[in-house]
Length: 219
Length: 211
Image (tube, rainbow over all chains, first blue to last red; front, side, top):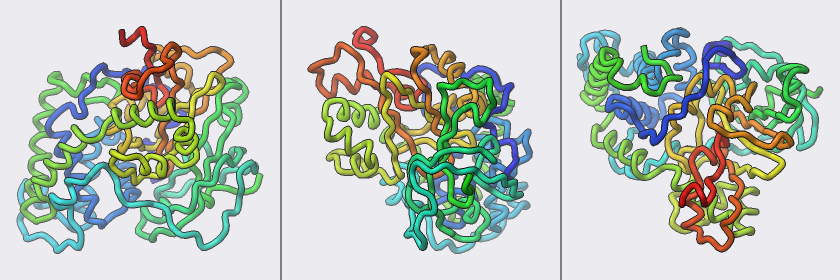
């Protein structure tokens, strides 16, 4: 879902940012298992990184607002059920009731040894030249799809400037719904804070997003 | 219910949620293992890697190198993935990495308003504050207020630039080299480079702070 609770840029009410001195990588053992299980299941290739994100965004808002790894866990449980890898009855029973499906790809111990983060590149060969070039002014489109998008609400229907062309990348809006890579040109688009937040905003602040070409139109 | 903007809520005060989560997580891992989808030894390895192999020490070495080597600095700003991958002794960076440089006139801050995108390969996993709703919501609308939460005040003439990580590009901030570090080795300099200074919510430490 696009206009969901995850799209937080510019919201008020969440309070101060509270850095934690000497913070550990994880705060509980179960967080470690959730992290590694999610990474490992991601390696099956059955869903994309955007499919995984969409799973989190589709959580009910109050479930989304739980702690980070609790949310990751809820999203993982949903996505393995949605892909028919695990049955609801098995989740309820807390154990496997049937043999698993055959997977084409799996996270093995050997692959895990080299794990340093997501390894698959997202850049793709371009089928067409980039429509915009650095320095051009653009207007972001006013889109509100019911499915996943990476154009934040605060940056819709705003005038900005193309600062850089970042190559042609997998288009999240397509990849998230199983519609393939559908590669699109990616740009850094920079906005004055006043364009985003109004005349009261600080004139010394600028904000950029990474915007895919379908998000952009001439001004 | 644990809440993202109170990092301490992960602790014992919420023991009932903790044990409920422990049970549910263990049950799902058991199911996935029994069905042959995950290998617990691979899970252990992934945890070990993110706890010991990746972390801000990698980014700190990159920044220190950029401070002492103008040619590397230039390459890093032009194509950070390529520049880091050309260095000996580093694990390959697979992400599309973009380095952005702080100057006396410009201060860069990185956020992911939509989720928690972060340059794992050079900074490790993000801290709780980076994933918190407070940071994700406020960084783009009140960056000076966020900096104040970190005890950072910039000169009024400094322009602030927020980078919202809305795609698979990842950002590394090159903080300014502190004064009084002329002639320092890369190793000495790397100790001044904090994680927060490479996200933009902090500055590199001064020699006095490490003395």
